[in-house]
Image 1: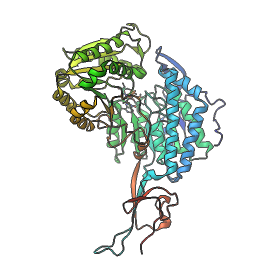
Image 2 (image 1 turned 90 degrees about the horizontal axis):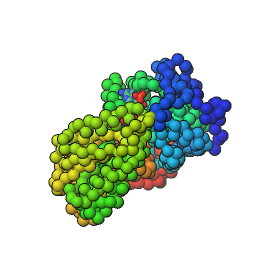
Image 3 (image 1 turned 120 degrees about the vertical axis):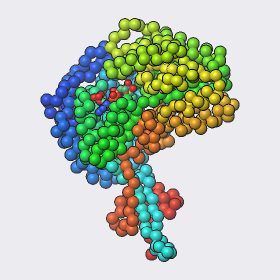
Image 4 (image 1 turned 180 degrees about the horizontal axis):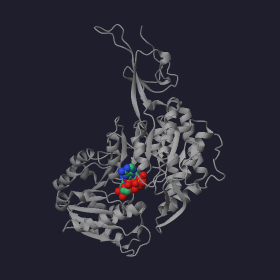
Length: 545
Ligand code: NAP
């Protein structure tokens, strides 16, 4: 493993400047600072927004890097990812301290988020080193086939070109500068330009410096990575509109994601935007489970609703319950926990305002709606809020479907129904979500099989007798779902299948072996799994004469 050289005297000293390949952004752009959400006060240093010339420079470098990185063997890509992970671990304390300051979230959260971020890099390293992810297929020629001879057809997945990633406010490490979108785009052979989230620019710079220093130490192409700061939306929009950018990854609000989708679609050459947006993650508690373990489910739900201050895209935001004494006990239990809880700190003033406004709107929206908010404090500093539980019945829910929209923060909606057909009617009205959760006994699952089938059409992940927060980074994970949960329900932003988003298939017909990429050559020099004439094999192949 090479030693990572730092470009500054101290690897953890912040400069507030964008990173454009091996250079630093210039001064003069709009200045902004991070905020400490615990106090609402600004933090040092001052950050400088990138200029539109710097956007062009970053894209130009990415374009120049693209062909070399697209051809880089899996072992070079793996070495890059592992070296970044090692570099981040080397300055873990500085990263964790800064992330805590910029988010108000506890140290333990960042120890595990950093471990997840590095683990994710190492998992993608294994995938690209093994190499079979390119889905190589070979249909051998049949020169003697009648009436038409069959040509030799070979296909595999290749990178798209420069990818722009918008870091998420709620995951400064795992979904930001070196997060899942960036890593999956690098792994599939694309250069990446990150538009830093203005809520945690210092954390972004620390991670970005490790990446830039790794690119330089390993003598990789300079444009493999740039990190641009901006106090507003101009840089992000210029990046999405830039004709040489080929795809976008985004995590954030439906309004932001939709604006970028529309911008990308309106370009002369439209490009894909993989946006992960709002989700309310419905939970259905079935009658047998409610009777058997209602208290346990109440405790689990409360934990999942308030984890990270409720600022997870997988937070359970609607819970459907069959009306009974047991459901009233569950609701009272959640209400009690909420009313006794201390306030939670939200990440940004925007998220804070949206939560307070969303709760007020819900209070006014329907007569048959009961809101219980925590009593932690009526005078809270910084971006703190009391948690809340909202309760209504299924008829009100069905007449006010806005109630199923995301309320980002520590709150949930309990909806009671009288029978299974009402539960099915409510499920049928749901839009796309990242997850749905069902609590049931064996008998419940047999009786509600049609609900489970219906939910499959609404979400990317079904959770049984558990809680949706906590998303495993693994090979089979799907963190996606139909619109509006994401812009493209055929994809996932977590897990190794995320590598397929920033790539496209290409096919070679009757191509001489010498011109084929390693993955498709007759000898199979990389020894990867390939589909040859419909059968999976790692053997070499021959050409019929
Ligand atoms: P956001 O407002 O969507 O912003 C995310 C990123 O996109 C930021 O870098 C933002 O830049 C940029 N952006 C937003 N609108 C844009 C536009 N029209 N053109 C170009 N760039 C644009 O999300 P957020 O600040 O993280 O949080 C706000 C809300 O998003 C939350 O209240 C929550 O509802 C939702 N959220 C959802 C998830 C999820 O995983 N589903 C995660 C986080 C947040 P600027 O900040 O400079 O505008």
